Structure formats: structure tokens, C-alpha cells
Length: 561
Image (tube, rainbow, N blue to C red; front, side, top):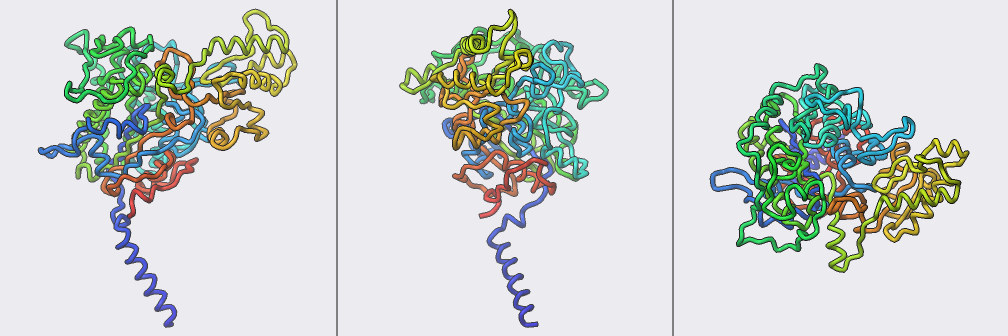
């Protein structure tokens, strides 16, 4: 009896002692609203490089700031990583709230070639669900999360039987759709051609936009001036002290229309207007309207609002990460987020104490290649058209010339090469031997660090260490290429972009992560964490199980001392 009494005392002491040592345990409660703020192409160093330009944590009047408020009132992980082979928008947004890597989610790229149906496939393309809100359907007939495999944080809220609302908003369709998962009440994105918010009848079976969205679209079209000026927010007395690349921008689609340097003149209601701070304002405005319409944060169970700011990516591709434009865009994001948080402070019962805010990104970006070369870094651009022709010529010489209009490669994107199955069948060739020829040719190119094939993947003969790890977390049979080349650091494809993101190197995979809310301690935590850790951390707060394919961990260091 004495033995059991001592055990009882020990357990009681340990429990109370643990509660004292870990006060966070007693604070954990379900938030009223979870807000996920994603900034597209927001590299890990932007929060530190531009910190002096941000608003203070709180003003004298009690208004909260943007980035500084989130950092100082939450757990800030300067380095969160996507440990994947190719960092880009589709895979990033598919990972964020699923906690699963592309090898499970089925989203290894933004686009791929569907050999079964012999056509190119966009990551959220689904011709069974038409776009609602736009009549211009030439490029993509329909959208849904059909290609995404598994569940998200929002899906698990629904699967648990909660009457929670799940809303996902971004200028980019793939960003909104992949964050929302399969059971979102609405995924909303922006059509630059019709210049209005749209969705698909996957979410809107009656094929009618909600009244609040229609009202928003009507207001967007009302412009006082046909031209807007994007001028820098940097004061003359606070000139940027970072090395800039303003002499290098060469994205013709954008630069020729708004100019390569400040001040930028932008036509109202044009796609170029989305590549300015106005795109941020549009996104935040739509998110706040959704808060009002769906009474987010006022329900008995947690609601989820996922927002992705796509404009940062547009500017980053055009001007590069060392430009005044990207610095100004980051400052604009700080202001827009501050305005958004102050609005939530009023709209949500209990204010921000009942809101959990997650801030992160879907990927980073490489420095401008031309600028790197000028500054003695080994870098370069790959002429994709010339390289494709070299592959065709080599295979014609090796296996026999093809008929006019026929090609060995059906499709290539981001150094993923898809072999024409019809040609293989007609010539009675084994895919592995054609893969090997392409691999041998690509390995001779100075731009590539490694090359592997589908056969290498099957036979587990992959490049070593980091590359092997990232391949195994990314490669998805039937969607990833038959042959994939891994570029050396700072080498990119030579398209019209000033720079891009498409690798597993630190500049592409490293993003910031901030978890802010009453349940999180205030600390900067100098530890590399995984983006896949976000999903299980959030589901622990909501009292649901992690998403089906989640393989991350709960970020306990954000809660406990």
C-alpha cells in the first residue's frame, strides 16, 4: 500500500512540477481563427535585410505593426526549409498545409506531361470544373484540387465534423486551390485578363460568384485614373545600402510595360498592376471581405483563412532579390499586413488573442545570374531551345531520324524531360536506353551538377547525399520527368526572367516561419525546421489529427521553455 501511495505522490509531484516548468501547457486552447499568411518567393533573409524599414511592433495609439509585431509576439524561426528537389509555387503551396512532400502529394512541379493522356497538365487543372467569373477559358478550361493527393489542415477540420469555415485566397489559382485542399468552402483567385476575382464550380456548384465577390469585382473596375505610379517608399535619407541589380532586369513581359527603374507607370486594370503593391492590397481586401461574409472567428470551432500574396513573386522574377523593387515590395507587405492585423483586432471577438497567425513562404529565389557573374560568382544561363535541339539531334543520330514534325521529347520544363512514348513504341526501343543517352549528353553540360533518370529512380541509383534525399521526397512517377538534370548552384534556365527558383539549394528552399498567437512563446529560435512541421502544429491546436500524409513534427519549442 505504501508503495502505491509513493507512486501516487511521485506522479502528482511530477505533473504539478511539469506544469510549473511548462506553463505553455495550460495556455493551449483552440483559437477562434487561424490565419496563414504566405508571401510568394519570400526568401529567408528578407525579414533580416529590410528590418530597419519595417513598422514598429506597436504604435503610440495602440495599432500593431506588421512583421515586427509578428516576430516580437511569436516564435520566429529564421530558417524553415522545403527539403525538395525543385522549389516552386505548386509544390510549395501543396506542402504548406498538408505537411507532405511532393512524392506523396503528387505535386512535384507546376506543370508536367501526362503520358497516359498524351497532353501537358497544369497542377490544378481539371476540365470537369469550369471557371466561374470569367469567360476567357482559352488557356485552362477548369480548376480543382483533383491532382493533389491527401488532405490539408482545413480538410481535417471538416473531416472531424467541425462546422468550421475554410477559405483560401491568392492572385494565383494554384496557390489558393492547393492551400485550401479538397474541402475548402471557397478558393478564390484573380484572373488578370478579365481583371477580377474568380473561382470554379468545384466550390460554386451553381456557377455563380458570391454576392460579396461580385461587389468586390465591381469596385475594382472603378478607377479614377487610367494610370498608376508605383514610386519607392524609401526616403532619400534612407537609401538602400544593399547591392542592387537594377541594370539587369530583362523580363520583357513586365519591364517593357512599366520600365526598369522607379518611378513605374502602370496602366490601371492591367496584368502589370498586379506586379505592384496594388496586388497586395487587392488580396488583403478580399480576405477581409471573406472574414465579414463568413463570420470567420465568430464560430464555436476554429476557422481557417489561408492567404497567399502572389505579387512578390511577379516582382522578384522581373527585378531580382537585390533590387530596390523587391525591397519596396517587402516594405509594402509590412504595411499591408499591419492594416490587415489591425482590422482583425477589431473584427474578431477577443481580438488577436483569439487569432493564430502563421507567416511563411512557398519558396525562395536565386540571385540574378548576370549580376553574379559580374561579381565573380560561378553562374550561368542554359539556353533551353538550343539544349533541346542538341538532344533531338543526338537521338536522331543514335536511333535514326524521325519523320518531319516528330520529336523524341514530348515536353520539357525546368530541366524535366518527357520522352515520346509513341516514338519508343514505333521504334521498339526500351525507355531506359533512350534515358541513358539523354543523361550522357546532359552530363557533358557545364551547367549541371547531376543528372538522373526514371530508371535510376526505380533501381535506386541516385546522386548522393542531399540530392538523393530531395529526389526521394519529390519524385512522383508519371508526373516527374523521365530524365531530370540538377543544375549547379546559381545556374538557371535562360528564359525572359531576371531570375527564378527551381532547385533545392538554400537560396530556393529556405524561407522564414513565424507562429504568433497567445499559445506561442515570444522568441527567435535559431534552429532549422521543416515547412512540413506547420501542419501538425496547427492540427494540435485545433484538436484534429494531422493531414493524412503529414510527416512533420509538432514544433514544441514554440510552446515550451
